[in-house]
Image (cartoon, rainbow, N blue to C red; front, side):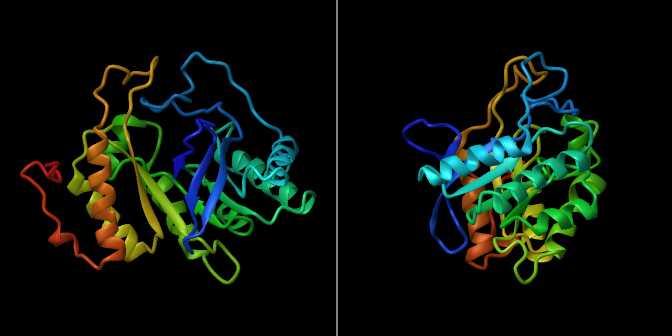
Length: 263
């Protein structure tokens, strides 16, 4: 997904699984969050204004933009307000109001909240075209370094695996994806692509996305070095080789530090 060239910010051009272009509204239900991840602008200890939509309010706004021809779909995420399941419930309610009361038949991508229950995953699978949950880092010890309160296996991998298991006739037609924050935890490209390979070939994820770390003011990592865009591009190239061209992980070339060559 890429922001539109006109600078409209929250509206993104994306491609569906069939190659069709989709213009999506990318929005948070709330920018409040109970987590304190070290690099995140939403972290609970950061001093900033907080705001939340009501499900009916956001559904109405999305429907108005769709009727005006500004968007064709919705990508909905949120900070965690209270707990994962109650936040997920409000996100699902937003989609239900959008579909039932406003007749919305457009594309919906829902972010699963870390630690969400299997019941909530099943409810999300019944209303969304795509589900995703951001793993952010490729190993449990790295989660501890940047998101100390998150349990990698229980809160991240488990619901991601459950979501893949719920793909079926009329359910999650555009599959399940994840995303890594590249460079935040000192991980190597080999670590990222080792897990990417497993997610694609063993778990059955549709795609893996990469977002280069960029320091945010008033966070503990505000002085850390940003990740070069070229590193992010190399990871996307490698993921495409693995996912679409039948390459094996052993065919990728890494240097002694486990990084893809940038030259």
